[in-house]
Image (tube, rainbow, N blue to C red; front, side, top):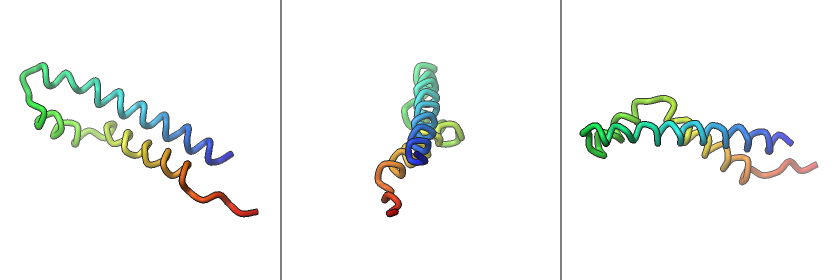
Amino acid sequence: MIRVFIYLIGFGFSVIGGVTAIAYLNIITAGQGIIDYFYFISKKMECYLFLFGFFLIWLSLYFPKNKE
């Protein structure tokens, strides 16, 4: 049951981080380049939630089950 909870938390973090990264794509239309975009989102904490959420999903799927 704890694995499902970790999976759902990771999914929520991934969605928040992914939506934020997509929302920041408006920087490119403001005259900035793709390198400036990646530099900008690398300084934003909420974009790291995507990577952390992806890690939690991976952890919940591939972490070995408890042997009872």
